[in-house]
Image (cartoon, rainbow, N blue to C red; front, top):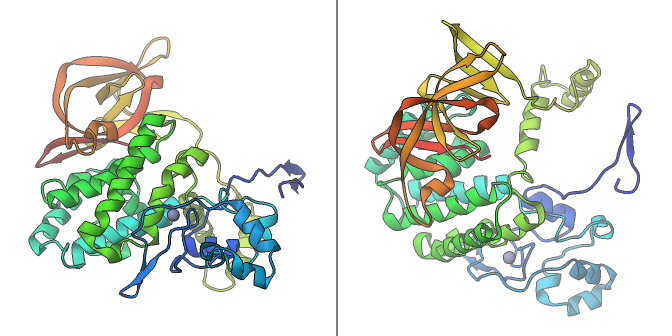
Amino acid sequence: MKTNPITLNSTRYDVDLLGFICDAPARSFIKGTYGHNSSYACDRCHVKGEYFEHTMTFCEESTRKRTHEEFVMFSVANDEEREELPESVFRHIKMTSPLANCTDMVRDYPLEFMHLICQGVVRKILIYLTSRIPTKLSRHDINKINRNIEMISAQFPVEITRKPRSLKYLDRFKASEFKIFLLYVGPIVFHKILRRDLFQHFLLLHSAIRILTSNGVSSEELEDANGYIDLFFKESRRLYGKKFVTYNVHVLLHLVDDYMMFGNIDRISAFDFESYLGFIKRMLRSHSKPLEQIQNRLREGVPLVKGKNVPILKLKKLNEGKYYELCSQGITLSNKRRNAMFATTDGYYYFFCHVTRSETGHIIIHCKQIIAIDDLFNYPRASRLNGIFLVKKISSRTSEVEVDQISQKGAVFKSELGLVCCLFRS
Ligand SMILES: [Zn+2]
């Protein structure tokens, strides 16, 4: 595919391989390696796992890095020669994959954000906090967290279609709910309920992933993220016990390397594929012969690739020359609090009031500036750096902002902590 372009409906497509995005079992299947429960499971280093209470654990820190050359050595060696390879190589590689001839068997297989972190580490933390001794929270605290989740769920902005649910539904959580919990909800609903050391441990992961799921991160911030992950890893065993430190927790240590190769780890995750699976499932009209049905729908003209989110500018709810809702580039702002908060490219925060159109057709957003904020937490860094803060003062004067100055939408939650703002990643 890399050397021979594909032609579909007379259009030529050149294929450039970025990487294979799969969960851990699929990754070991296509690479020909042993599974993530084997003793040399790590795709990136030679760390040796230890079987402990029916679980493969990886409590040692990262060791010597794996290379593509190990896969080449394995593929050219005969059975006897393979036995002489280091144990960490022949107990990692099970068979020679055809992909070894055309891909870098280490670099081209990114660690996958959705399965490893959202459905892996975040889910595990929530399970330990709700059901595993000694970290299990009291019934009273779990109820309090659930009330907090339900309260902010009702205030979530319109762009988030899957609203956070109470931990009562934890076994039915979708991957996107774990993601929202880690990036936005957790630091707010855990605040002042979770034991201090457990809360700080969660914030280490939250802060690191906030950084690694952003674009254009500086080398200093990447160093910070690496430090937070190191500390998260070291503290995991002390706080949650040895069984907690499985493959998913260990490979966090290699995430910054992935960011340096691929950028924003959310961009190389399975989330896009999962949402496209939903699109495919909606093509089905019955349970019988699903593949044939999909082929028929495609023949009927359902597009194979969804259209891009084209920037649009819509104004709604006109009253006395003022518009009370603005839709632009996938963001909706309105005078309802849940859809009112936004940030501008020059780093200021505002609450939307209304929009007017000048005689020349120019669109002006009238808004109130947030003039004083406070951090919700300061560990391991100020919460405002993660886009989460408390509103302390709003200007009484109305400001005017142009549409192209909007950089991010925010969510606003009225809670016992005060008015909490939470910016979505740019
Ligand atoms: Zn490793």
